[in-house]
Every structure is written in C-alpha cells, then in structure tokens.
Length: 97
Image (tube, rainbow, N blue to C red):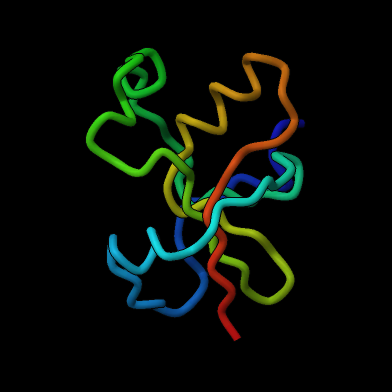
C-alpha cells in the first residue's frame, strides 16, 4: 500500500492559502503511507514529465486536519517517489485547527 487511503475530494474546510502562503511554510518529510490523497486520478503526462515542477512548487502541499495528512497537491511527486522505492516525500504541511 502506497498511501494510507485514496480519496477523491478535500474533506477539510477551505484554508485560503495562496501560492505565497504555501511558500512561507518550511518543507518537511512526510511518510507516503500516512497520506490520504484528495484526487483519485492522475494525468500520466504529469507523472512522466521531467519538467512537471518547473512552473510550480518543488514541494507537495499537504493539509493536516483531524489527525490525517491530506495530499492536496503533488500526487505525481508522491507516485514518482514510490516508483523510486522511497517511502517519504518532501512537502509543505499546513495544519488546520
């Protein structure tokens, strides 16, 4: 099992973070098996594209809510890490109440 659970939506309330807000959060490592996805599909081109992070954040975005870690952005990064047999991912984590 790669992820704790595969979800298809964001069950947490809107956090209102902008790109600048995410960038202010320091990255840390999170275990893949502790993440709950918020998407159940992946664009294969995003997984295979080596430049997929060129225009975006280098780190995945994770929301911590009600004791769970939700992978909001960076599913392709997480799967790429799993394919490389890594069990952790560098992510920016935002904690909601």
